[in-house]
Image (cartoon, rainbow, N blue to C red):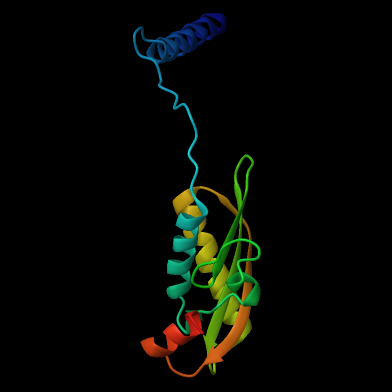
Length: 154
């Protein structure tokens, strides 16, 4: 009796395994594999980083300094510089240049900036963020638009 039950269990397992393979191997249905590659430009990633930077309260983008103004090195826009390292997966290094509102704790703000930028880029691009370097270029006392324009274009 025990042997008959084992045979029935084996028969049931064979049935389930064969029906699973039949479903996955139906004729005429092939899974389409995408071909080619997707590349996201540094400018697009820079815009994502700027939007993430603006979402952190008490932070304004600042000028990246003399080197960027003289066009030495990589381009920067609105306080963000992007470097993409090709590979599998692509890795992104972000340099941010910010001004922090007076009275806020700078290490906490820098952490918030790093997390916001990292999450934004990884969620929307699929790239891995290797580093977010935060360069605090100054402090500001109010957040009106005229002052933020002065910080961006000194």
